[in-house]
Length: 217
Image 1 (cartoon, rainbow, N blue to C red):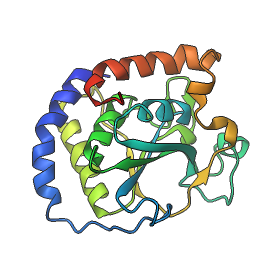
Image 2 (image 1 turned 120 degrees about the horizontal axis):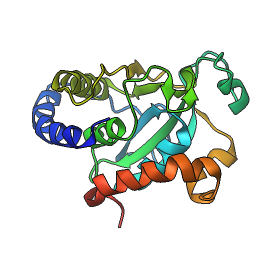
Image 3 (image 1 turned 180 degrees about the vertical axis):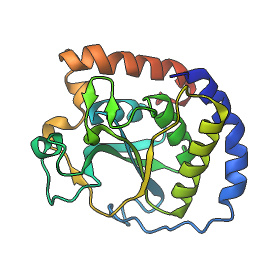
């Protein structure tokens, strides 16, 4: 995955995307959070492999208020980790990200999303294989949908990746199931665990270097 070209491409494209998005009527309904508590904020739901990795990355971004690991996009009611890992429920491991729109926008979240995993591998991230690890954006409204489709198309056309992007872009169906307690804040609470040291730590360090100006102080 070529990281530097993606940064340059996003920087150039955000101007165009902002102009285009002005014509889109944004749906302000927050389907999964308390409207009173999060009235001035927005929510994104992203899947990019193991949710421990996604959570660890987005927790560091300035403007991100909360990240929760969970499951969405499947048929089974109230799935648990074991059932999702079977690959039979249709769910993806995702992170639900609540962010302050006065500090960070959806386009920046997409930029980080596409840089911190390989969106060209179908139902796989490294050694994590299965539809639960798919690259996916669950959009909350038409504005998020338009931006996700715009950037995906432009990144594909730019040649930033060696292969076509297979990221799924689907409407959020309103059903987000928070993962078990031990999955939450996993990297920070288990830094010496083998997967954390071998997989998450290098990813987070690479991310922090590339986005040093956008991290929490």
